[in-house]
Amino acid sequence: MSESRTFKIESKAQIANSGIGTYLQGLDYGKPWMVIVKPWQDKRSLEQNALMWAMLTDISQQVTWFDHKLSPENWKDVFTAALYGQKGVPGINGELVMLGARTSKLSIKKMGELIDIMNVFGIAKEVKWSAPDYYDEQGYVK
Image 1 (cartoon, rainbow, N blue to C red):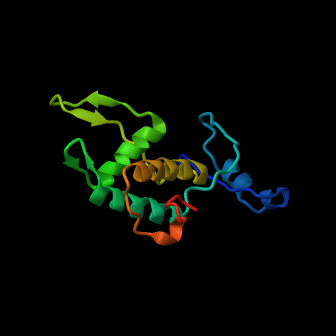
Image 2 (cartoon, helix red, strand yellow):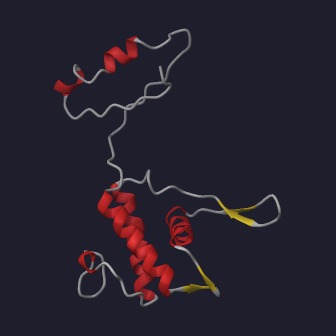
């Protein structure tokens, strides 16, 4: 049996049918277990993900950053660093390595915050967004 399992419960009636009891009874009780119950947070939406990559692509094509053209993936690192206040550490060969953050695990709210950071940056740099369905007349995310 795997070491970790997640159950999404939306009502008291669902508890009996969720498999939680069966799962807990099947654990190896030769060692202690930790059970954590916390509010469910939906992960970022597919629409948010598509918007993020469209914005990253627009920025990568239109913005030069300290004499460098960055890929969309590199820009994602820059923006997630802004979101989380990430830090860089010296690498094995003396290079600077940014400690990364994954966007696939972001909640809808946090992904919205990341998109807002990108949007403000893009407007300041006069980026022309290529996904017009996502923006109002002033260029802000709807």
